[in-house]
Length: 292
Image 1 (tube, rainbow, N blue to C red):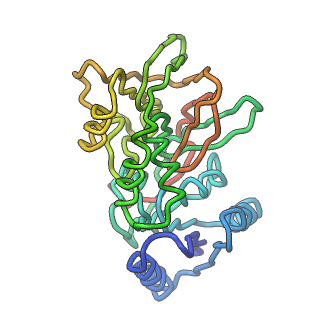
Image 2: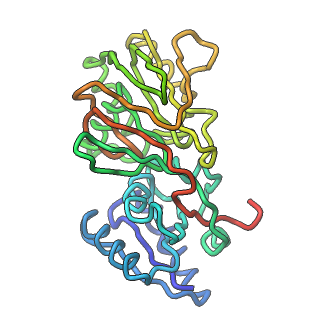
């Protein structure tokens, strides 16, 4: 089988990079044709991947990294017939975890494709981007932005440091949303719109979200202060549905009307609102173990 490999030359720790190299070597030893599509920059990698997909040369794309690299790949692979395989080796591997892919597995790389949904995000100018996992706004988005600017410490501790640095700047967002035909107002410390259930290295923000249910899942943690939002984030549960400060809804389309709210998806910047979020069923093919 011809496998195009997309990986980050600098992402993850030394051990993760070594494991990725060993995994790719095992595929090559097994007789598969391995072709690298990793450039010096994210833009170069995206261009290389797009060229092979548009030329019809891609039989399977193996993404070796975390959610940021998945995000890059789905901008190209969305609504194509090219399956994506996953070798989770990033700081956050939420999309892979939501699909039950916890470790690199040769069978999963070579297995049959499974269709899953994606979230299509459209801005005021009509430009489209795709989200595989969850889009966020509010305090966790500020943490995400701060963590991307930090260089040390490595690993998941970077989010703890970023949270401490951002806490003095905490504020809730007064948001106006349209969920299909319903208008919703929320005083939100954290807003999550999920195609899958996890973000931030394993936080269960949208517990009922499944990658193939044809729905977007909204969670908003409302009317809490600094200590309240820290408790929710520390619990990594996104809040219990029976708690009065937790709003949960589902929709197929969510319009966020307010101007100037920063949104992040798959740990990457999506830009500022107003934005429209729509679920696109079966928009991505992901390989899995037969019967999984």
